[in-house]
Length: 339
Image (cartoon, rainbow, N blue to C red; front, side, top):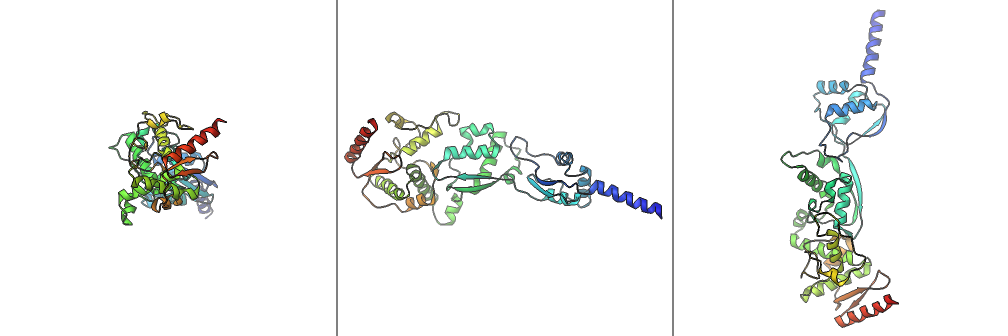
C-alpha cells in the first residue's frame, strides 16, 4: 500500500512538472509581423515559450493537441497569462485568435503621402518597401482624420504563394489599412452615392482641409472652389502643388523636400494633382479631411469670392471678388514682408 502511495505521489509530481503552471505572468508577444517571415512554426514557438519558462515542456502542449484534436496552429499575437495556467489552458489560448493591434492618430489635413508612409513604417517598422512610391495606391479609399486601431494579424495570417514579396507586402498593407477607410466605394454605393460623387466630395474636402485650418473659413474656401467650377476656372490651389512636391517625381519616396514657400517656378511642377497646370479636380484627395471640411464640401457657402491669399498671421486668409483686388492685396503683403 505504501508503495502505491509513493507511486501516486511520484506520478503526481511528474505530472505537475510536466503539465503544471510555471507561475510566469504577463503579456507575451509570440510573433510580430515586422519581417519577411510569414509565421513561426508551432514547434519553434513552443520552444521559445519553454525557454522563457512560460511552459514546462513543449511536448506537453503537443500531447494535449494530439489527444483533443487541436488544430496545431498557433495564432500569433499577444498571449496574456496570469501565472496560474496549466499546460491545457495555454494550449487553448494558443489556438485562440489574438489580434495584434497598433494604434495611429491621423490628424485632419494630414497629407496622404506622409500618411501612407507613416502607416507603412508603423506596420512594417521601416521596411525598405515603405520608401518606394509605387508601393502605395493613393486611390485605396477615403479616410477622415481620427484615431484608428490596425489589426495586423488578420492580414498576416494569409499567405499567397503566387505573389512575389513586394506584391505580398503590398496586398497585406492594403488589407490592414482597409478598415480605416470608412468611406470606401462599397459604402458609397450602399448609401446611394456614386463613386464619382464620393471622389468629388472627398477631393474638395481634402483641398479645403489643406488650404485652411480656420473652421469658419472652410465653407468660404468651398464656395471659392464652387465659383471657379461654375466659371470653368482652374482651381490654382497651393496645397495641390505642395502635395506634388511630397509625392515627388523621382522613383524614390519623399525625395523632394516640401517647400516652405511657393514661387512661380514651383507652380510648373509636372504632376496630375497640380491644379495650376491642370483644369478641374485632381485625380483624388490629397489629405485626410475632418467632418467640418467634408460638410463644407457638400454645402459650399454662396458668395462672390474667387481668390484668397494668406494673411501675415499665417493662419487666416483675405478673400477677393476680383483679380485686381487680389493682386492689390498681394502687393500690400509684399510691402509688409519686405519691411
